[in-house]
Length: 375
Image 1 (cartoon, rainbow, N blue to C red):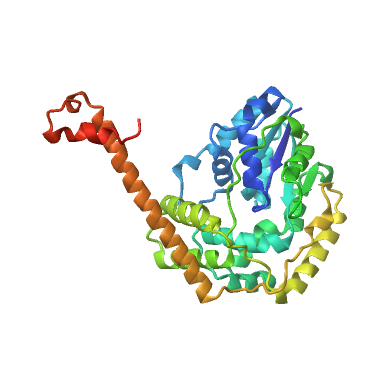
Image 2 (cartoon, rainbow, N blue to C red; image 1 turned 180 degrees about the horizontal axis):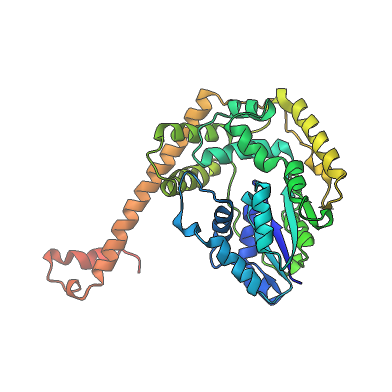
């Protein structure tokens, strides 16, 4: 019987990196009898939106229609030993969706794989991801919602995906605990390939034979940078549809410019909330330890490790202004380079046209300019 490993998240636990490595190595995986289905890197994302009936960023992508059914057909036709499916939005599926999903995979022995990281890194990471995905909730308000009565948009988004004990309890109602694999994300400073090694142990792969040089995306924002993006979202309102926002705000402004800002740092747990985070971690570790799951890693890695004192819930206005000045300067330089590059490309192409190669134009200007253009 084919084994299907469902990697269900959680978001912000290295899922983008793992998916990139799996997609990059799909031919090698096939040769080893393992299917990572899909002809595009976002195939599992679209299939997950389809099976859960979700939109993303308020945009209903027509490419999601039938994506889950197509993925399941590919899985059913696979003659090999195992299949890996991966998307972090699977974790938050309600029970009825899990039942439907498992019915579609009834021909296989289904395993669940969940990657988990300590709340000290997860809480700030989820906020900045929400901001990149066009939300305008301040970090301060978000923290109050998550650590308080768990009410409000921020709390709902966080706990639906990041309540690992609750997520796995829901899935293990329909899948035996011995087929639930919990992979803890190594702490900061651990060897860079350790998460991949642990993931491979959970899904039965030989970690050493695959190319792990896939680009690491989904870069983190500092508190001031995240606040700047939040204010941009607030100013934009709904003037950009999601595909444009994803390309311009999330991709270009947040991930390509602000996440690369020297010395930006990261949003952190404010000093006054460390007691709540420690207590929440104690409760989570105690719950998971008694469930009988296959743990790859160490549950103690789910306890937060804090940096030096001084972390705050809101950046200073000066820090946000500095981030804005940096972003504006980088955008201006980028625009200038693009304009110069476009002119060079135009002149290079024009100089190759047969009817412009002669010296009949005034002063033979094109021939002289061409000497300074790249081939």
